[in-house]
Length: 184
Image 1: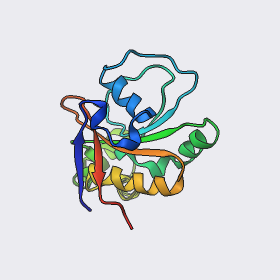
Image 2: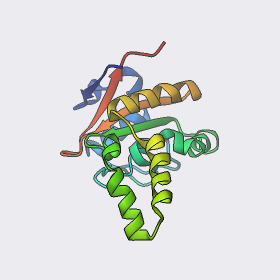
Image 3: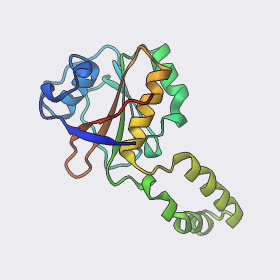
């Protein structure tokens, strides 16, 4: 799979489908290019990584924000279904980021298991089982490719919802679009 990042400096840099949408509002609010306005109800749901370095600038009531390791949408599908069906959101942003620990989780086995054994009194077998279960569920090879693939799956699940795969730069807090070839 080949994906690329597209910088967004102005609204004209956005893909046409995102202009005049909650995705454009997300870029405006986060980039502080627009005055913050109030919202009666959230027009957007955001799924992003639990990494504490991700700091989105959003007005109150603008978005439901779901944080999960590696921006794993599978782990929050019921939450997404609820936001779409009951809350009536208009868009969904999946935001991955650079330097994501879930791309290197395979190298953290010893620290993960020993931390639970020494720090929490778990048995080595219980810690090993938790690691195996979690790494198979949350481990990713590439944050960019993961958000692109998640967006493609969610576009099929919610064919009338605007779904945007995005990327957060930890160093400067910039948001970018993720683009790739459509799956067939």
